[in-house]
Length: 605
Image (cartoon, rainbow, N blue to C red):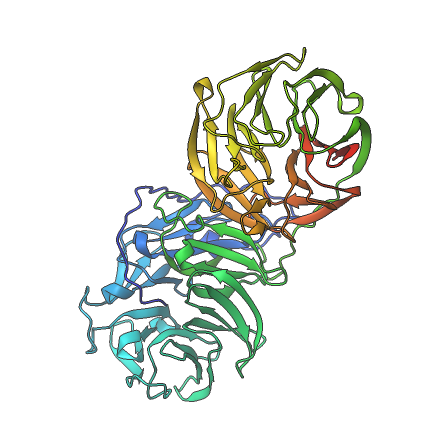
């Protein structure tokens, strides 16, 4: 894999689960089978149906550890005493793992049960080419009869070792592309079912070589991508290979170098393997994550790690450079089928007094709704969605404001008419009375608001001179604190809270409308991308309907469901008419959508 330098960081979290009790699973989830590798190796339970049909072993290089995670992203095993593990693979029988500590010039085998070091080869941080020495070893595989094969990068060779550490065979040694006599910096030596090897050479321009069991060359193909890493031979005869570059991509290619599938947008991915269910697992090293990709849709359907954020705690990785799959007890050869999003029913339930857009709205605990302002409007409407009527008025017409509940009152933030204002107003939803509160630190319109555990957060907006990127927490005395920032200033986005997280979909940036869906964690102050819309959209509203997040507006009739983890955005309904700048509120399992340039009130459920 990559030859980037490694740093050291230890993870204090040592949660290890020895023999968890298997959950009760229905026949829909698991067939009754003999104990599988995960059960035999660590007593791990079978897993429910989903994108990851087992457990993943991850070599977390810069955290000096290897860990095994479950489909629910729980750490079920880890060893933190390694020295920059670059790869980690299960040995036959799943009794141990073997890892190459590339920049320590060593190989280490670790017992899964005891974590004891049961085999080592090489000398710590002493590179060499004599027996007992290696120089930046990569991809150590334990194969038949205790034999180990290693790509010895800077020695330009493939080394095969007996279990007693005798050198059985050396292929290469000359640092030019001339397989099997020479390899230009080989960083991959994947064992093949016939006993041969698939060797990857990273020396420019990059080559992939198939060797027969006797070491002779079967074929060689020039890589169509720069810095090919750890090529894998697929059952259909094609080759899956990651490009260790930034930006990086993964490709499927034919033996003549023709690319038949690819996915980009990655940062130095070093290994991609196809799981038994057809998904592709890859470590996206410099994005500090391991991902599962659905090839037909090119969507990330599962992820461990936080995109672009290295860390040591649970859920974090730091340059993960290797992975392997530990099958569950369930039969995993069936194809993965993405969940089909259930359709959302659309019903018109009422009418506004007149066509309305850019209004603020909140839902009250009793099922009533409050709608505030809008273009050329100072009206405060309230009551059930089907019977909204005026209960008061704002001091001046106000649109593009954001509203949130605080106790029994509605708080309106910013907005404006001809210019953005910093105004904050308290509205009594029973009487319609309005009182001014401490204003914002600067004018702000076109923003979103979300309430997480009783705390209001304001997202993005427009100050009158610039697009805002701040995520503000509203504290005591209405003072605001910036807890995080979006990558770009953003206005007219869909903003909603769900499960103590804030979701931000679409919106307008200085570069134009965006298709990004972003997740904000107010506790960790992390902002990360989790999905993309089918097209860039702004002037939208995002709302929760039960356990679903729905996006409407943007000048379309479409209703999209936004994934609340990692997955695809899916169209789930069509409105009778296109909406722009609608308002939307959540009433339990039902979402209510109002206005959007019309006088319609729709119920989505």
